[in-house]
Image 1: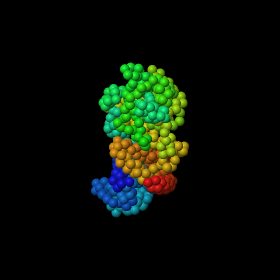
Image 2 (image 1 turned 135 degrees about the horizontal axis):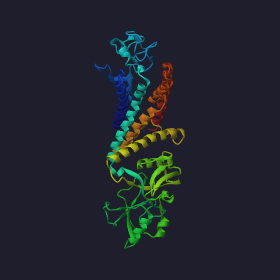
Image 3 (image 1 turned 90 degrees about the vertical axis):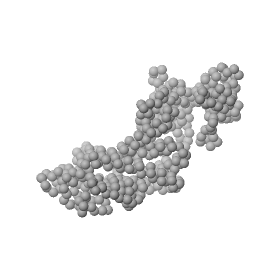
Length: 479
């Protein structure tokens, strides 16, 4: 990894963490919670500025992973003592106390921002304590960070959809099937694995704009029959020697084909043999509804390594094609399903279509995060598939070096959505862990003991840090 790629990764992490903490910050401020510090990074402070108006300190810290919003009365504090509620005295001018109100590592009691333990404070200041806010406000504050990451992912997805343009906006309506040359020997310039891509006007035709995409074996038979010479010229899609990319421009060959040769040496898509037809609109892969090609291709990749049920709409009727076996491939020791048919693009590319693809592709990305977690517990994915900041930095570096800007943008989207989803999981020390405790508090109608909450979050934090260290070691070894 180069220094620039590491710098790029730190910039991406920094922006995503800033957005996350900004969500907590804005909602807390909106509900009148006093903010002690807004920090990007962890560990010793590098730069720190304190607002004279609000008393909030804005910090940049040494370790460029993580960040936090420190709120007055956030941790280890009881609400007002006795029968007092949410910062209001039972008797006018009666002193109000908060327990253990202090900022980690420093005491700012002298300037009145943070009272020391058992120090009498002003009732108005007590109203600004996080612990004195209603459970519903605390739930909203905890939700704000993850939701900001999900919102950022959605907005960046819209940028991606617009940038990719109409060519990348496809439906779930079947346009045709691949016709693949499957014989071992070469034949009139064809090699095993080639698939016929498009009909051309002749061997000297270099203009691809009027080429006709090949979608079925019947189309080839008709083209041969209508040819005055009995030959047709086609472009073929062929992988390079490494099998990682197609050779461009596509090779062009002229073929003499008969029905017998087509039956003997060529193979149509597996899905076509299973009963899928041109103009079928695919509605579901197993029990998962799909509305765009991005969703469809992901679900086939995720589920199609085993036979799947495809629900299609054909001539106005819903039909279920059972136990459809699709092609599969292996990557990093994991088997994935593969799409072996062609799909129609959207007829128009207007704002409504942009919103449609943005929404469903975002939903599919959220589902991908949950599917990945499920895959770990069901042993579909091994521990080697888990990456921390070091592994993600390596991936960012590889994508950046490829020069594919849209791929890098999609990676940022995945990281942002992943950050939002993971923080919503009901795990101690994460936002989702706080949310779980607050929901229990709302159901019980009384707060959980601060000591219990503190122990749960402390143990959770230790376990998360331990897991982070293990993942970091694994990522370093795999560099």
